[in-house]
Image (tube, rainbow, N blue to C red; front, side):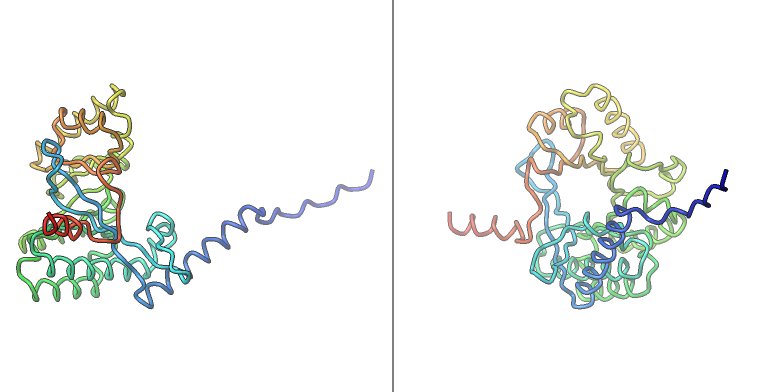
Length: 275
């Protein structure tokens, strides 16, 4: 019997190749957008749970503009750039836009997303220092959001930076809480001001007894550490209602408003002036 031919090592599948090419194209597009400062903030309101017509603050969500003029949300590229310097530069641009918005609109508070990897990035710190020096009221109206997963990458760095910047009046929000694995000892050390409950516990909570129990537990943890709570991804009246009953402080989601490039506080002012 003739010897069996040696099996050649399998190469990448067509699907893997397509995914690789797509990621490279996305990365190139974002790099060009950052280089040319073709980025925007989209704004979504966070409302008080007991007075849902009153806005507590807005979240500024970074977007990039592709060569065709399309607005691309971060969910479509953040994975590709998170560990690259492009991610750090994008955080710098988001902060720069946010500080400018706060300086021009003294009546609002605004949260800006931040990777823990950027908090020690020299250029990001320079952008922050420059913005605070121009307007002393900005610090107390600025909220920096760090995801749970990101915070746990460099917890000591995050803790040290938070202590420094909270002395300036800046608040910090722990985003997507429940999606990762924050050790409770770090939660105590972090001293976040706001805890944002991940959407997996919020969607459909009105009819999900398990998520109601888990959300109560998260609220109890937040209260113990003197943190305000925000429920993310609120999409229905019933969910908003039960979250308010459970004791969540603020609500955010499509039920109230989708993120919009047009600053929503301008629309509110226009309605008042034309009334």
